[in-house]
Amino acid sequence: MKEPGVKQVVFLAGIALAFIATLVGGVAIFNKAKPVTATPSPNGDMASMHAPPPAADDAKFKSLLGNPAPEFNLQSYNGKNFDLASFKGKNVVLFFSEGAMCYPSCWDQVNEFTKDIKKFDDKNAVVVTVVVDSKSDWSEAVKKDSKLASATVLLDVDKKVSQSYGVLTVDSSMHRGQFPGHTYVIIDKEGVVRYEYDDSQMGIRNYELLSELNKII
Image 1 (spheres, rainbow, N blue to C red):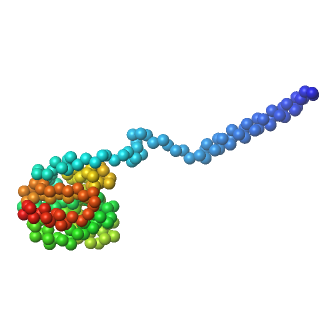
Image 2 (image 1 turned 90 degrees about the horizontal axis):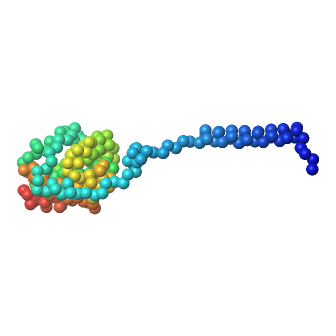
Image 3 (image 1 turned 90 degrees about the vertical axis):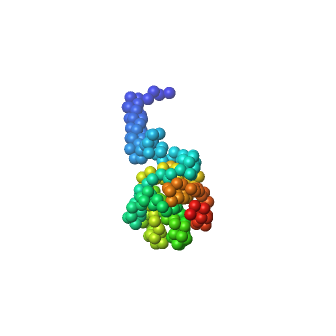
């Protein structure tokens, strides 16, 4: 068999080098074009977003019964100040609601309060809804249902009041730790919690609330 000549060897080596250069260049172009996907830190925002919600815990909520209600002072959606201490001498019904995102259940309950306001007045009671929405967030709900504008809705934006009443981790909360669910508290004329109910069924509970008020007037 004839040995390859020098020129043939050089020619074949050149082809091999050209092939390798083309292959390396293609890989470099592919890597440059490929989007970079960062691996989120286990302590970063992505981890917190996908962390499981806290387990339901109603111990703090249940501990309110028979004790003085936590004091608070909040602004209403309509710009009025609501200081719980100033309502001594009246019964107060608090409805802690998931707010603007809770359609239709929470909206229906808020509107039913307005519809039955005279019945609550007759029980010497004021009814207020507490949400953790900002004013702009609740405005979006009002745009969709103008009747909501007539209700007294308190904006607990920093969630401190909801935390003090223990309603962020009760069973009805679908976003535990972040939003209340569908929870009622009745405070009597002396400022003592006389009734509480966490409603996982998210119903309209005017009848039950009026019945409970009958027991304390």
